[in-house]
Length: 591
Image (cartoon, rainbow, N blue to C red; front, side, top):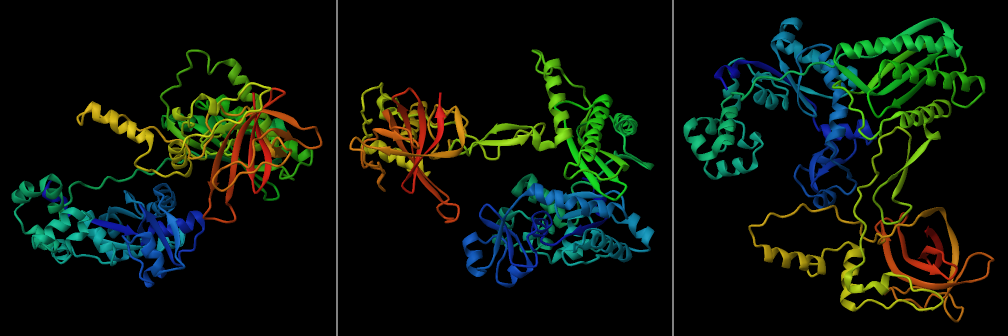
């Protein structure tokens, strides 16, 4: 950390309220309205309209909405902010080099090069702001000073600090600008209110009193940076494309052209020591229609694999055009472009030890990928198991080759409570028509807490955990906490077949009267017969439940309240029934 670091003239580009602007770019939420981005239930950023109504950073959600009733609330997403900021950085790199991204919404670069090229620091700042506005339609401000920290503060007011006057510029800035709340609070209680007061303290005393982080803050207050700029290397241009005078209408001609492009793409990737796991294939027809498709692969795409997928896709497009399929090209192809996606460093692919990447798996992958090339990616779907309270909520169908990530986090299924005993969750043998006994009141309290998602301090699992923790002593290391189960999720086993549409049914008691469930989860009668359509009633040999669930009660249009039962029929079948708004239905079937 040499003192010469303070002499580097730095230009910082800052985009005000960037989380709000990113939400507008990605999700289409107008930033001109009252918008607030929340993190940890507190306002992280807000729009100009929201500030006019009194919304400020750090406010709790309830207080912010009370000040601005029409406030649109958006959850903070760092990935969204970073993705939206990438075009801004690319726009800056078109007129200047050596850009370092400080965070989403702010980037820095050495001011010397642009200033000499454009004829001065002020002209360079105006050119960069104009470039970002034209390329991205984003408002930005530029600040120039000696060092990244001072330039970042100058960018908030669009100030160009003269060379050698950075310490004077920072002298009147409050200590809160260090973005260290604990340190700023302590300094204010000690009477140090500005960065100039803090910089006047001896460095050795600051290190002794405030530690290493306080010493770094002291250097920033004095106009010194703790490290030089770490410039970003622009990504290499890996795309390959070609234009054809004669439209490609035959599959063999298009496949040959695609193989040439595939070899060029593989050579370009190999020159940078890279490989790709996803391949984007783009085509333009003679009448201007644009086509695009992304192919995925579990391993690394070789030159042959790239050429093969290009041929499959071109065959699917051109063959579909001849067959008159919808959304297919109506003319020959005049331009092809291959875009590598999912690029990573090529370290080689380790084959599976037990044949998990063997010939059979590869043949199946090739066959299914070929079907997708002819009929589209939605023609081949695979199931992904995720989180949810119902069996139909836990399964999500994704196209073959896409990332198999669940839509919602999973959790272990709830196991039967020991206090209920095996008779409560097991189905009695036929032909006895016996309803299972109700659990005792204390167990109902625990089950209610689990169903409705509360965290009562007196629940049995927590009491057992506290007792075991007392036995181990306070010095024991806490085991990792597993992901909790979904409240209201059915216990094991899971049903074998989930019906796409629930099948209406009727449950009757011994007197042939419909069975219902009260608000206190008490049955109006013992389930004895199950009536499905016009068929004769089937005797219910045993049953377990109810398992209530009340979902999204705060949104009337999406609310769903029902009680579920597991029943065993006299003919050997086991079903999952649900009762909602007085109507019974069959949701799933057990083996």
